[in-house]
Length: 314
Image (tube, rainbow, N blue to C red; front, side, top):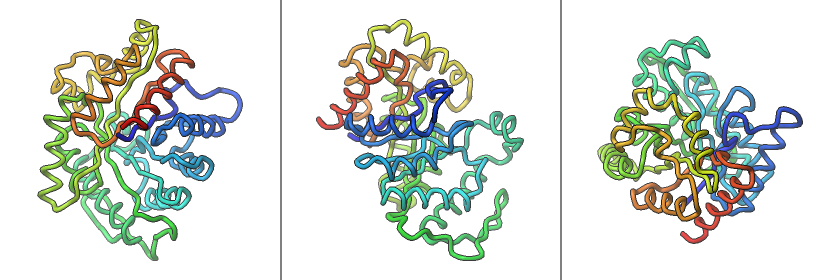
């Protein structure tokens, strides 16, 4: 079982003074030392996740890097392809591009981009991105997207071809992930949902399209701590909005979970290890742990050490 950690672990984890890029690289080095398989960088309004991933790939040997996730609407696929290939060349093949459509209302309020035909745009975007990453060229005048390259856009050294994972929970996104990407980053999806819905849906569409079995890197949350009540309260605050977003609400309902915080493993080492086993048995190929800072800094490091030990055991 491959296990990675998403950093920053929450939106307040970086120092307000000093150098945040240095802090991210130091954290990545600590994760590598703990034995984690990968470090995933979240895209926020401050650092650029793909640039930090490229820097980490050069500075920290022995750990894979990725993004979880880069919002699609804010970057044209030609630009994104250049950035992804650069990160892949920097890491000599250790980079994975995780991307997603993001929430329609968030994109409209933040970037002034109307949601429009989301599924059509997603499929056209992935079609162009895949062609760019494989061949370095694009020539599409679609319904929602135009992308044409005047000269080759291949980056020497960006091999193997950058793998693309799509943040997905609902049926349309999962189908796009299976047919046009290399797999999915399931969000707000518990083990039962993964086993009974996510894996069968991805497998069915991949087989119908003649594609390989997809990677399934589930985004999960957990922390080893004795402050269970405090960590639970922080998880509930962090995840409150997810309960009302339609795609996430549907995923939670499939799992039979009312409160998103019920998906978070909070407590002893055995509880977190049981969570890892349950997702492994459900059929995921890897896990991306977020919110490992729900407890104290010492709790977070205990969590990383445990996850590293689980990687070695599996």
